[in-house]
Image (cartoon, rainbow, N blue to C red; front, side, top):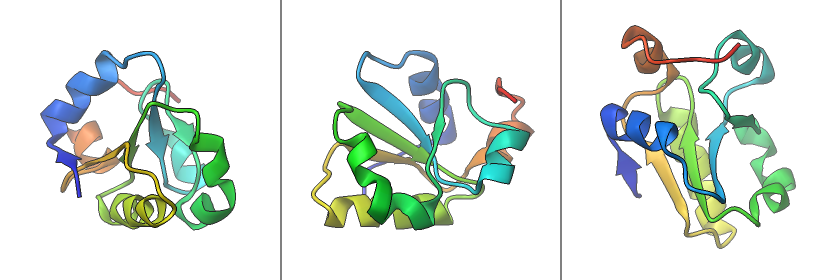
Amino acid sequence: MKTLSLNEFHKVSQNLEEGDILLDVRNPEEFEAARIKGAINIPVGDIPNRSDELKNYKHIYIYCKRGGRAQIAYQALSSLGYSNITCLAEAGMDAWLENRFETEN
């Protein structure tokens, strides 16, 4: 599994290249409360039915609250043939907020 540290993920989020996307796999209520600027929300349980929405992205950067759901989403997308994915490593939105990185809500 390809992962980035919290600081690396923050740097990527600030400089997304055209065709890249931040994918928040938390539930909609969590997403509405706080999210990384520019992220889209597809809850982890919806990945199998909504993965086609991601097919035109060059690279998908996945995150969740603490890392567990992001890893599940990574595995689900990998099993569907996606190879252009990276996860926020051991942290997640909790660590993002603790570090006071910019959010959108």
